[in-house]
Image 1 (tube, rainbow, N blue to C red):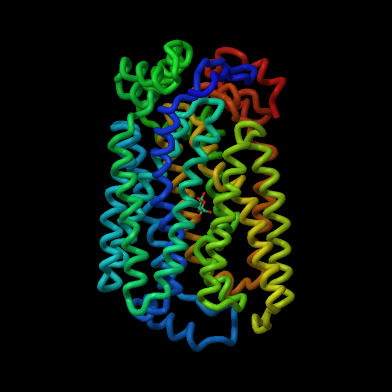
Image 2 (cartoon, rainbow, N blue to C red):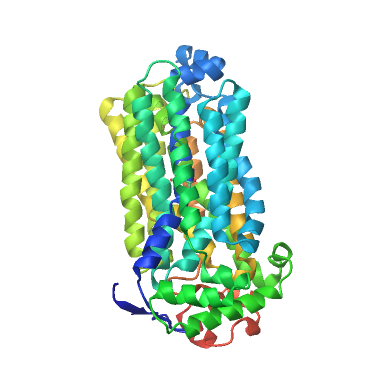
Length: 514
Ligand code: BGC
């Protein structure tokens, strides 16, 4: 048992608690939820660049890839191929909306379990796929799993974590996502060398491993005190709170959870209520954060790094290897966020990461523009190609400690209990919608916008960095059921929050506000 902590943020209540092994282990297992999403993100790009896979299901793309070398920007452009990648995100979008009800009514852990289970079935469909229909059905089931897991896991982690370490614990979700990506890329690297259809079957079928991990995890995990209270298990909730906080003196935090639950009972329709003016900051943020996260352009790298590296003239094996390197860099750099997010806060990371991504994207656009020109027919030398890879790594590092983890953390911690599940569902749905759009349009956009595509994403990174600077109040160390005070104290959002929503400390917070 590590030492005790007392929350220091002015204007919000101080809870007394210890960092217990129980909360640590619970959040560690809970974070497994990110593995299924990550595994899929990492596996798709590699599989869609495997020749036997293309030959089997997308013969036209295969032929085009083999023959068309005249325009590097358009080599892989195929609507059907991108539909394979992006169908999952549409399914995840829809299922996250259902997941919000399961998460609220039955508890967070059952949403995680359903997520693991549907993902498991999807992996079987994909691993044994005989035709394109099986492939697509499999992807849709995987998508259902991702929707449920992404809706419930970040909320679970944020509710379980002690307030002063909520950022670090919640970032475990992103660490698991990236870990899943890296493992998938490594698996692809080896399976791509196998002859015939066995390679892609192993890659797609192994998705069952993280699925089983999250299913077992969900079965052994306790539910959060917030959810237990919300569902009427008040006694159990208090015991749970005492055991995860490592002290019997949890009265203050417990009372805040009870108050939050009382308030949430007045709200019969979370979906309607989230539209009320008093929830405007949460509504805007849960729409804009995932929108911006995807408009960083990160998934161009996640999905298409092997394709992008091939466009830069790397061989197929070297491309998969480079994708592996960017994944490992992303994983390591996510820990920068884990260790700093509760100390320096969310705003510093968003702004620093944004500036780093902006500069590197502009540099990548210029390099590719100079080398391939508008016609896309040039050639890039080895040292220049390496420089582009280095710039991509700098960009990925910036994302890894800012928009990556914080894109999941902040939406999960800013909403009061009564709208939390609905808000998180909106977060996932918007995230999946734009993931879908980027996945679906990237190859066509690359074909038409050429190197300008990097400037397109850089433009959005510029806008989002300014947006966060102006609109995001600092939420580090603030207990989750006390978040209203933070919004009330913000120079812009304060006007939407009625005084009754905040019963103490608002004036104090005002002085500290952004
Ligand atoms: C994003 C994904 C992205 C992943 C890895 C996540 O936070 O939501 O879209 O692929 O990070 O970079």
